[in-house]
Length: 124
Image (cartoon, rainbow, N blue to C red; front, side):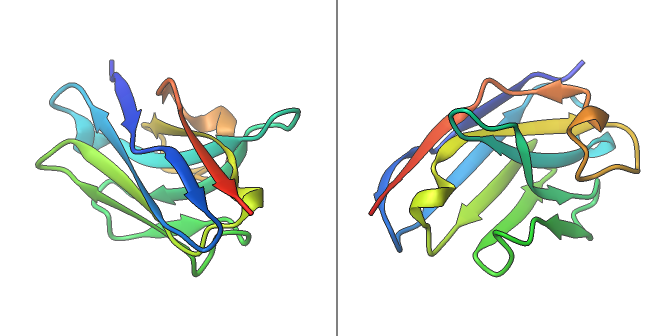
């Protein structure tokens, strides 16, 4: 089992940056592909970014491509989401998630473990 704890959210002005972190428990972190999702009020949870077990492959939603970067440090059991050029529409609760399967990186249903989320608010 994996426990995930996100941090790094906050309030930032449009055009600013935030770096989210997700710390995982357990010694099998490198066995899981990791993803970031977000959920705005009244909306469904949506895919943001994902990274393979080794970190060699990344995936992004079109809405964040070129602005966000996902990375991981398997030695520290941590995955990151660097968010630059933030827009008000990026405001949401951001969740990290882990999955053991190798497919469905963008599919919320494929993820086995979830963190509690961290709020990111972008003011205009």
